[in-house]
Image 1 (cartoon, rainbow, N blue to C red):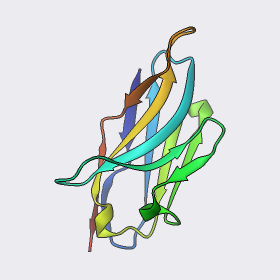
Image 2: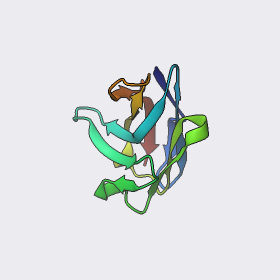
Image 3: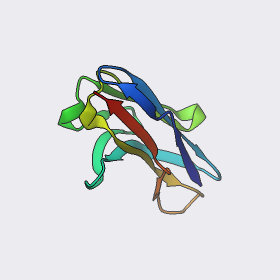
Length: 120
């Protein structure tokens, strides 16, 4: 099982960017999917999460600016980021709770990270 994140890049303050993350491999089911980020010199922090039923959760600093969504048919999760600020600069990681075979316990998988740089 692999998670492949993409969509990062350089954007000006106030701009928008859309991150994508696709799961591949032997997958029976995907539970919650989410995004974390790690700014230079800081610990990785939670950004957003979406449950298998579509319930969304956000950290306070991105509420109203970021929107998480998923496409179960494509085994993908997205993060639409708007009104970006310099403090949003970080490497963004996706994760997902995946069951890779029937009867197996769910495991948490992480993508490789994609860099978002917001210039002021």
